[in-house]
Length: 140
Image (cartoon, rainbow, N blue to C red; front, side, top):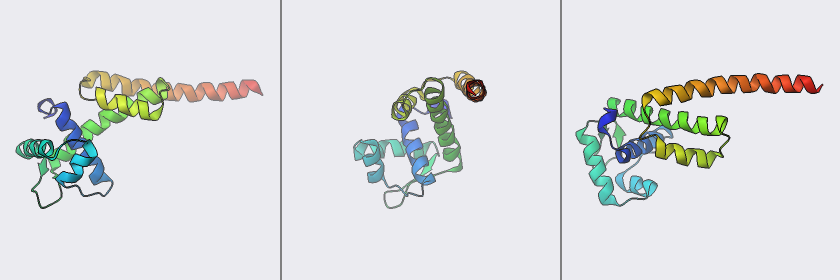
C-alpha cells in the first residue's frame, strides 16, 4: 500500500493519525487549516484516501482511519520518528529542524535505509551513554 501513496497523501494520513492519537476529531476544514491547503485540495485527497479504503469520511462527520489506514499512518509516523531521532541524537540537529527535515525525507527514503538508521541510532545512543559514564568517572 505504501508504494501507492504520494508524499502528499502520506502527509494527510499522518496528520489524521496524529490528530486522532491526540483525541482531536478532524473535519475537512480542520485538515485544510492544519496542512495550510485549500478545502478543494483536501476534498480531492480525502476522496483518494476513501477510494484506497484508508479512511472513512463524509462532509458531515469527522474523518476516521480504517484499520488499514491506521496501519499505513503508523508506518509513515514511524519513518518520521526514526529520521527525527537520527537527526537529533546522532547529528545533534535542533528538534524543529530535525522534524522539518524528517517530514521532507520520510516520503522518499527506502525501508532498508530507515532500518539501518534506526539500528545506528540505538547503538549510538547506547555507546554515547557508556562514553558519558566513562568521562564522568575519569574526571573524578
